Image (cartoon, rainbow, N blue to C red; front, side):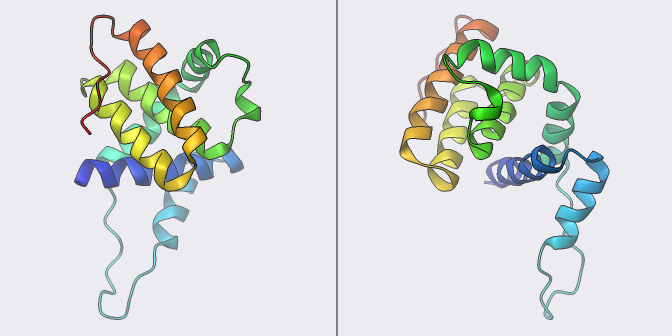
Length: 147
Protein backbone atom coordinates (compact mmCIF):
# COMPACT_ATOMS: atom_id res chain seq x y z
CA UNK A 1 0.00 0.00 0.00
CA UNK A 2 2.91 2.37 0.67
CA UNK A 3 4.16 2.10 -2.91
CA UNK A 4 0.64 2.64 -4.25
CA UNK A 5 0.39 5.83 -2.22
CA UNK A 6 3.87 6.86 -3.41
CA UNK A 7 2.83 6.37 -7.04
CA UNK A 8 -0.27 8.45 -6.42
CA UNK A 9 1.84 11.23 -4.93
CA UNK A 10 4.31 10.97 -7.79
CA UNK A 11 1.50 11.29 -10.33
CA UNK A 12 0.15 14.38 -8.54
CA UNK A 13 3.60 15.97 -8.38
CA UNK A 14 4.26 15.20 -12.05
CA UNK A 15 0.89 16.70 -12.95
CA UNK A 16 1.90 19.95 -11.22
CA UNK A 17 5.35 19.91 -12.82
CA UNK A 18 3.85 19.27 -16.26
CA UNK A 19 1.49 22.23 -15.96
CA UNK A 20 4.00 24.67 -14.46
CA UNK A 21 7.38 23.46 -15.80
CA UNK A 22 9.27 25.12 -12.99
CA UNK A 23 12.16 23.83 -10.93
CA UNK A 24 11.36 20.37 -9.57
CA UNK A 25 12.46 21.26 -6.03
CA UNK A 26 10.01 24.18 -6.06
CA UNK A 27 7.21 21.85 -7.17
CA UNK A 28 8.09 19.34 -4.44
CA UNK A 29 8.23 22.04 -1.77
CA UNK A 30 4.88 23.46 -2.89
CA UNK A 31 3.30 20.00 -3.01
CA UNK A 32 4.31 19.10 0.54
CA UNK A 33 3.43 22.55 1.88
CA UNK A 34 -0.04 22.29 0.34
CA UNK A 35 -0.88 19.08 2.19
CA UNK A 36 -3.26 19.90 4.99
CA UNK A 37 -1.88 19.71 8.48
CA UNK A 38 -4.54 19.38 11.15
CA UNK A 39 -4.37 20.93 14.59
CA UNK A 40 -4.07 17.43 16.04
CA UNK A 41 -1.00 16.78 13.91
CA UNK A 42 1.00 19.97 13.42
CA UNK A 43 4.05 18.09 12.10
CA UNK A 44 5.11 18.61 8.52
CA UNK A 45 4.05 15.90 6.06
CA UNK A 46 6.67 13.21 5.59
CA UNK A 47 8.37 13.27 2.21
CA UNK A 48 8.18 9.99 0.34
CA UNK A 49 11.56 8.91 -1.02
CA UNK A 50 10.09 6.45 -3.54
CA UNK A 51 7.67 9.06 -4.92
CA UNK A 52 10.49 11.58 -5.24
CA UNK A 53 12.73 8.98 -6.92
CA UNK A 54 10.01 8.30 -9.48
CA UNK A 55 9.38 11.99 -10.14
CA UNK A 56 13.04 12.92 -10.51
CA UNK A 57 13.56 9.88 -12.74
CA UNK A 58 10.71 10.91 -15.03
CA UNK A 59 11.82 14.55 -15.19
CA UNK A 60 15.43 13.50 -15.79
CA UNK A 61 14.46 11.20 -18.65
CA UNK A 62 11.46 13.11 -19.99
CA UNK A 63 12.55 13.27 -23.64
CA UNK A 64 13.25 9.53 -23.91
CA UNK A 65 10.03 8.68 -22.03
CA UNK A 66 7.86 10.98 -24.15
CA UNK A 67 9.45 9.59 -27.31
CA UNK A 68 8.61 6.05 -26.19
CA UNK A 69 5.01 6.99 -25.36
CA UNK A 70 4.53 8.82 -28.65
CA UNK A 71 5.86 5.80 -30.54
CA UNK A 72 3.26 3.52 -28.94
CA UNK A 73 0.29 5.91 -28.61
CA UNK A 74 -0.97 5.66 -32.15
CA UNK A 75 -2.56 8.85 -33.47
CA UNK A 76 -1.99 10.72 -30.18
CA UNK A 77 0.40 13.59 -29.63
CA UNK A 78 1.65 14.13 -26.09
CA UNK A 79 0.23 17.65 -25.83
CA UNK A 80 -3.23 16.41 -26.92
CA UNK A 81 -3.47 13.72 -24.22
CA UNK A 82 -5.29 14.56 -21.00
CA UNK A 83 -2.66 15.70 -18.48
CA UNK A 84 -3.54 12.93 -16.00
CA UNK A 85 -3.15 10.22 -18.65
CA UNK A 86 0.08 11.72 -19.97
CA UNK A 87 1.65 11.74 -16.51
CA UNK A 88 0.40 8.28 -15.56
CA UNK A 89 2.02 7.00 -18.74
CA UNK A 90 5.26 8.84 -17.99
CA UNK A 91 5.40 7.39 -14.51
CA UNK A 92 4.73 3.84 -15.68
CA UNK A 93 7.12 4.02 -18.64
CA UNK A 94 9.89 5.23 -16.33
CA UNK A 95 9.19 2.33 -13.96
CA UNK A 96 9.19 -0.16 -16.83
CA UNK A 97 12.45 1.22 -18.23
CA UNK A 98 14.44 1.95 -15.10
CA UNK A 99 13.24 -0.21 -12.19
CA UNK A 100 12.94 -3.89 -11.47
CA UNK A 101 9.26 -3.62 -10.52
CA UNK A 102 7.42 -6.45 -12.30
CA UNK A 103 5.59 -5.16 -15.40
CA UNK A 104 2.28 -6.60 -14.20
CA UNK A 105 2.55 -4.50 -11.03
CA UNK A 106 3.48 -1.33 -12.93
CA UNK A 107 0.58 -1.73 -15.35
CA UNK A 108 -1.93 -2.73 -12.66
CA UNK A 109 -0.98 0.25 -10.50
CA UNK A 110 -1.29 2.61 -13.46
CA UNK A 111 -4.72 1.27 -14.33
CA UNK A 112 -5.89 1.66 -10.72
CA UNK A 113 -4.75 5.29 -10.72
CA UNK A 114 -6.42 5.86 -14.09
CA UNK A 115 -9.70 4.47 -12.71
CA UNK A 116 -9.46 6.83 -9.77
CA UNK A 117 -8.28 10.00 -11.49
CA UNK A 118 -9.38 9.64 -15.10
CA UNK A 119 -12.04 7.57 -16.89
CA UNK A 120 -12.73 4.15 -18.33
CA UNK A 121 -11.64 5.20 -21.84
CA UNK A 122 -8.32 6.27 -20.36
CA UNK A 123 -7.92 2.91 -18.64
CA UNK A 124 -8.13 1.11 -21.99
CA UNK A 125 -5.83 3.62 -23.69
CA UNK A 126 -3.20 3.46 -20.94
CA UNK A 127 -3.36 -0.33 -20.84
CA UNK A 128 -2.75 -0.56 -24.59
CA UNK A 129 0.15 1.87 -24.59
CA UNK A 130 1.83 0.28 -21.57
CA UNK A 131 1.46 -3.23 -22.95
CA UNK A 132 3.16 -2.10 -26.19
CA UNK A 133 5.93 -0.37 -24.22
CA UNK A 134 6.39 -3.46 -22.03
CA UNK A 135 6.86 -5.65 -25.12
CA UNK A 136 9.61 -3.32 -26.31
CA UNK A 137 11.51 -2.59 -23.09
CA UNK A 138 10.96 -5.91 -21.30
CA UNK A 139 10.38 -8.55 -23.98
CA UNK A 140 9.36 -11.93 -22.69
CA UNK A 141 7.58 -10.62 -19.60
CA UNK A 142 3.91 -10.94 -18.93
CA UNK A 143 1.50 -8.04 -18.67
CA UNK A 144 -1.13 -10.09 -16.84
CA UNK A 145 -2.56 -7.88 -14.14
CA UNK A 146 -2.99 -8.91 -10.55
CA UNK A 147 -6.77 -8.47 -10.47
